[in-house]
Length: 57
Image 1 (cartoon, helix red, strand yellow):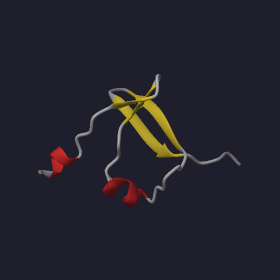
Image 2: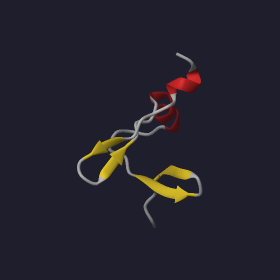
Image 3: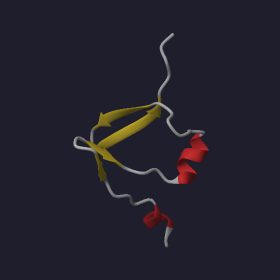
């Protein structure tokens, strides 16, 4: 399997109103993310951005 094909993902339905896309292990490990960590999902032109959530101080 080619690397570019490895990062192609399908959108999966979770419940009635939510959708899910899995993130490759190499990406979340390099970001230091953990299971159940809070993230911010933001719609941008042409896609989405997923960032670590940081509490306001």
